[in-house]
Length: 166
Image 1 (cartoon, rainbow, N blue to C red):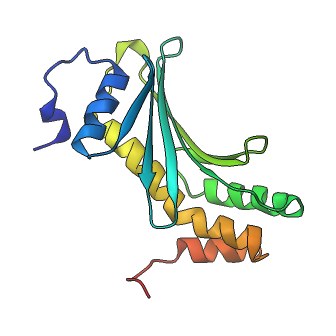
Image 2 (cartoon, helix red, strand yellow):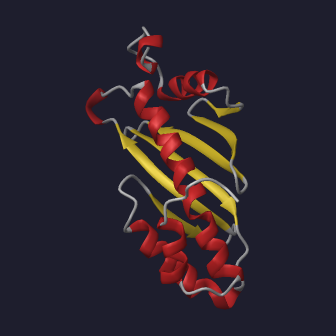
């Protein structure tokens, strides 16, 4: 059964839909406000804070998947270079560095202009894609920050296919 088959009400608020998708995936969520929801997803490398917010003014469902990072100040140019390299490979969303908060963030906006309605599959894909991107590129951020690896070399690690675990 497709996720969308679980929802009969076509007029569901986007954040209500996110909440229902999270329930189906057994993700713990907190309704921050009428138009915003937050959750934590546990990955192989760390936990990621995920927020989704509905912006009625521009009819956009915005996702941010964040994790704390405190790279040494001298490594920031290499981190920014790495972000550019990574974003060249991300077709849905992209990474950014929030320096004041010391947070790496993967952001994506689903535009629902003209009264369009988000589907459960779209919302699930948004969250799963953000989570997968953070998991995939987290080691590259660590290599550049702490192992003083070149961004191009760190990218080779991130884009290599993994076949099992050691």
